[in-house]
Length: 228
Image (cartoon, rainbow, N blue to C red; front, side, top):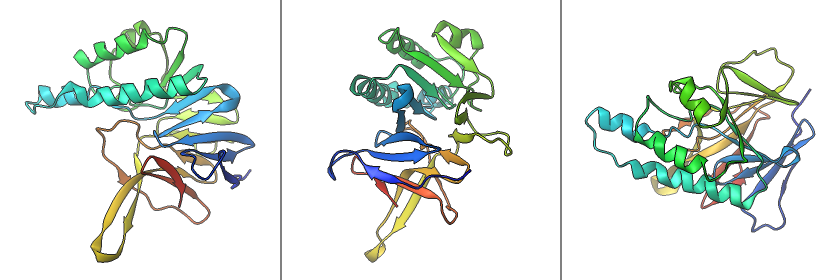
């Protein structure tokens, strides 16, 4: 099975979003660094890394917890704009052990009591499972099957026939222009059998990718998603 390379803008050329069709499923790529799967009314997000500033404060580095508030507010706006019924977190929801930023997330969770939330455990998701359960989040230790997709954080069966959607590496593209200008921009990266979402959290690093021939890359710049 191969990746369907058909890509089309939504509505007009001024649209911020892009549609990509994979395994006959249409996915909408948003500049907020998320994917909306219309047929399932599902939002796919990876690598929020909430609580990371608290992790640094414990190490004696003074960072405000408000760093993460923009991420939460951005998530709220997306859920208000789209008919989201399910939220799939593809790992690294919370960066560290429990700190006060988890309480801020719990307060946010109460604003969306009917939202079904799934967390595919990432390498930074070391919170006690009971805390995850109390937040009314369904925890998956390795993967979640949502045909034709398989949602994971990073490690998966390379022989799976499903199309893999994951996170973990925080993909980005580096551009170099004239006069030595350069920019590193987060991106969505789709290969033949797997795709990688950009990190949703603002307080994260990026990894510059090296796409293979035939891969599709969509970068985010000035509040829009654009094809490479």
